[in-house]
Every structure is written in structure tokens, then in C-alpha cells.
Length: 210
Image (cartoon, rainbow, N blue to C red; front, side):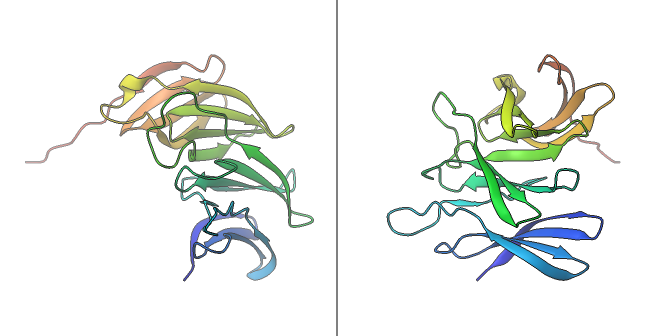
């Protein structure tokens, strides 16, 4: 059995990732005007029993189309924290429908808090040629799309969550002020992209009716 796990669109271009069974790689399909024009197998990183360990990450922004650079960016999760390569980002060339580059998530020094290792938690593209993304270990990263490399990484304060790693599950950008807004454990935190420090927070609360 298979199902589509993530989707992205730009103008008449639609990209979707098909999650397949555990013995076959996930597939990224590219469609234009309702017709498939290409498909790309994702690296499965099979274990010794031929079960795949790397899958398309089911996160906000897990698939991104970059028409200016002719690329698709795919977040790959390390499903059980046992992938031989580890969690990663894939860059697909839209002209050739081939993987142009694979970027390993930065190493995490310390005991992991989740089976998914350093898998991304949310991802978005900025107008300034960068990707912003979080991971399951409570970190926030900036990727330079020109070099396709990590340029900044910060570990979010542990006290942002009571009993879990401070994983940002949603990211919004104020490009004019150079700040990102992170949804972490139900609260919104304003992070400066210049200093990579949290400057203010908005705590969530329940609204009680009569």
C-alpha cells in the first residue's frame, strides 16, 4: 500500500511524495498542468533486512519548489534513528529530475530524545536564498541554497517545553525585520536571524466561554 505524504505547488507545477511500503523507496512525483512529467526515487538507506530507514518527512514545508533555481527540496526523516546516512535534505534538479545533492543534518552531540534522531521538524524557504528548518532535537538551522550547506545552527533553550525537546513544528518569517516566529510546544517565540537568539515570546492560553 502507498499514500501521498506531502505536497507542494508553484504556478502550474505540483510536487508530491508517495510513501510506499517499507521495502521500496519513497517517490517524489512532479506534475505540470495535471500531468506527471517526472518521478524521482528517494534514497531508502535499507538496513540489513532490506527495510528502508529514510522516508519523506511528514512536516510543514517538507517539500519546497524553488523555481528561481530550478530545484525541489525534500526533507528526509530518519524513521527509526537507524539510517546509515541519517536525516537529510535532498536537492532535486528540475531540469533533469535527478538528485543533485544530499545534505546530512548536523550531528547532534548528546543523547537523542526521539527515535527519529535529527529528522527535520518544519521547513520553509526565505526570499533571501536560504532555508529555515528545525529538527527533533530542539535545534534551529539556516541553509544557504547557493552552496547547499548549513551556515547557522542554534540549540533552542530547554525551558521552552516542560517535558520535551523544544522542537519547532511551524515556522513563519518576517523578512523585513529579519526574524522568524517559531511554534514550540504551543507557544510562539520570536527569533532574530542575525543573532539567532529568542527576543520575545507569546504564551498560548485557553479561552474559556461561559
